[in-house]
Image (cartoon, rainbow, N blue to C red; front, top):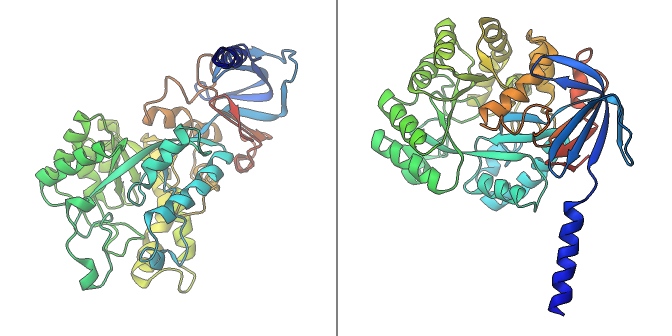
Amino acid sequence: MIQRAVAACFALSSFAAFAAPTTLHCGALVDVRTLSVVRERTIVVDAKRIVRIDAGYTPAEGAIDLKGHTCMPGLIDLHIHFGSEFTPASYTEATRLNPPDYAIRSVVYAEKTLLAGFTSARDLGASPGVSVALRNAINEGRIKGPRLQVAGGVGTTGSHGDPTNGLRADLMGHPGPERGIVSGPDQARNVVRQRYKEGFDLIKIATTGGVLSLGKSGDAPMLIDAELMAITTTAKDYGMPVTCHAHGTEGMKRAIRAGVQTIEHGTYMDDEAMELMKKHGTWYIPTISAGRFVAEKAKVPGFFPEVVRVKAAAIGPLIQGTFAKAYKAGVKIAFGTDQGVAPHGENAREFEYMVEGGMPPLEAIRAATLYGATVMGLEKDLGTLEPGKIADIVAVPGDPVKEIAVMSRVSFVMKDGVRYK
């Protein structure tokens, strides 16, 4: 009996090893390195990698017909919150939902994101344990979702990351390092080490206030230089990039000088901040989608608490304009939406906002492919359609150069050589 079982397992593994490659016939293919579109290409995928790209349509039994579609690398969103999706009930839900509730929601939102063509992403903040568990479950093949890198937060009292902002005094308490809230370099250093121990891939800080948190300022600086240096140097020792939420200029400049990898939002970015970003090689993740969403909802009576509505009305409309200035100034820009503010699965609307802001369509696609992979440190395997790369491939019906809105109508999704749509 054991011999028969072993023989059966060997036969199955042999079949997997010699399974026929998958062939895609693409009407057009986006080359994000040269910012060009080439016509009539065949992509051959064996196991999880691209083995060949041929000119023309190479005959193959069972070839997937995408002749009316444009193929491109799997898309990458560098700023998502998978555990939630913003509604007027979000503030009251925070007082009654537990991490398992958010974990269940994250499973739904992760699959929506994958089917929208985003095969890789960064989760930049979730309830305790949720994002690590989500990433692990996706990696193990238990649920469907993008390949994830997840961030653990480090913040200061009253900052955008303080979970007790806006609570009444007896509930507010004095959260400390056990909740990621630090005072001074030593506590900051220790929380980074704890986040590494907990299994996070990167560190998320907020050097200014935020829009949706219940603190009154959206742009005041929130971390001092000594704390920032403790965070970035310790994170570097542990191999963890640091991403920084920042709206105000002073907090942004402190973070850039301290060596963060990315600035998220960047609303009040000025010329000096842009020059600092270019000098230090800092990436800008605009999240125009979040700005547009909160600006629209600020006009809806009762959608936000008043302390939030004021900030949303002031900050939200500015992000697209900041993006336009940063693009013209030559700041490095990669794609990120802050979905979880705006609805999950609608990530691709960011492409439309980027094009409205002056970025050509192919550059916007590069920001969400090659540049996204570069920020994640995965450019050797992802971000372009080339032989040897992991087969993350998406397709849209039509020509995104002529109509960028087709990016929201993804018709084909392959991740790791597996077809999901």
